[in-house]
Image 1 (cartoon, rainbow, N blue to C red):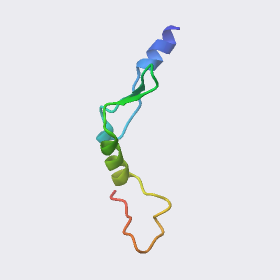
Image 2: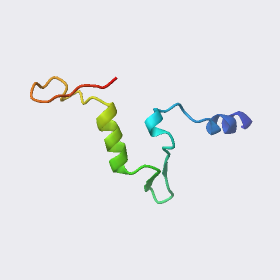
Image 3: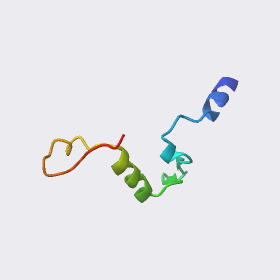
Length: 65
């Protein structure tokens, strides 16, 4: 039992742009987050390449690494 509590206290490694991000589901089933949906979408648009769009010639989809 003690090990499980210690394990749950550890935070996973996250992208530096998402430091401080926390998400929970409250007792009524609503999602509570420290970031707004717009902030999350902005991060995803910047950091993740959409597999459906990567091969299209009419879009400039490139990753900045």
